[in-house]
Structures are given as C-alpha cells and as structure tokens.
Image: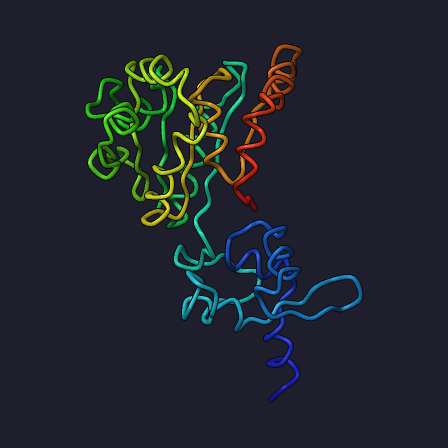
Length: 256
C-alpha cells in the first residue's frame, strides 16, 4: 500500500467534520469519549476514516467515495442538527436568518424543516405565502396532532419544509403558563422530526416566554442574530438569564 493511501485513512478533525457536516467540537468530543478510532499527533487528533463509516447513522458508502475537504452528501450527516434562532429583541433579522439558513442548507441537498414558533407567523408567510395555515403548530402542541400531518413544503425551495405557525400560538402561552415541565414542550416534536430530516431549525418568538424557552431546550445549538446597537445587545443579556429551575432541568440533556 502506498504512503498516500495510508495517509488518506487518517483524517484531521477539520476534514472529518467537513465530511460529516458537523462542528469540529463534535469530532473532538467523539475522540475523547472513544466513540471513534483516533490517534494523537502532538496535541492534535487524527480520526480513522473507517470508524466514521461505522458510526450509527454515519456516512456508509457515500463517505467512502468522498475526498477530504469536499462537502458530504446529506446521508453523510452523523446525526441530525437542531438549531434554534432567537433573540429577546425583535427586528434583529431572526426570522430572516432562520429562513435563509434553511434555504441554503436545502440547496446543498439536506432535508430541512423549519419550526415556526412565532405567533406572527412571518417565517410561515415567507415560505408558503400564507399566515393562516390550518392545522398548525398550535394543534401539535395543544391537541397532540402528529407533526407529519401539519408540515407543508416551502414554495419554490426543494428539500425545505415548514411546521407552520399562526396567531393561535398565543393560546399555547396562556394554556401552559402554569404547567410543570413546560420547558420540555417541544422536545417530543423535535425527536420525531429528527428521524426524517437532517436539520431542524426553530424560529423562536422575540420574547422570553414558554415558546422561546421550550425551543432553546429542544435545540442542540442556537444562533443569536444581533444588530450593532444597545437594545439588541441588551436582548442577549436577557436571553442568557433563564430561571434557575429551568436551567437545572434543561441541562439534563446532553448537547453537542
């Protein structure tokens, strides 16, 4: 076997992350926990290519045909990604970020679903041209309707779907305000969606209420759009100051 072929069996963390379309921090975590075969070169890790193919939900043959540094197809995702887009301050480009991120990932061949958790339904209107779709996320959360019966495809964007919102989401806040464990409201819904989609994007409302907190608890990672002015920055401070009880229960889920 040639030296080039041997070298190709071992990937840098960045190459492995690119092939699987995950954050390099996830690859580091897998190395430290022993989930994938690796070696150490000085202070850096090298990941064995075959161990990525053997991971549950891993790349399989698609990864075998890819070259280090090239984007992997949708089937090469190691696991679905759940991303919440949020800021306590409105008007900072939150929905615009969620919609465009979803469209960009869909154009790369990933199956993407956007959960619109804002009663204003701006993401729903942008992707479908309507803001009064029925059934909606309200029916999923309050009446236990299956998400698959509610999700609709986005207009003119293949591989992108939306779980629509409408003004009825305000009822969710009122009904669940005093319910114990309300911060876990969205987790079962997201768990179902990750079986069918590569990426779940949650567009949270511009407030720190039941809907926003349940969206953050259901997500593995989040994006906080910020405009360069005082009130937008103040929204970040409020966002990262949840109640102590909510924070303790939310940390029971391992995020990566």
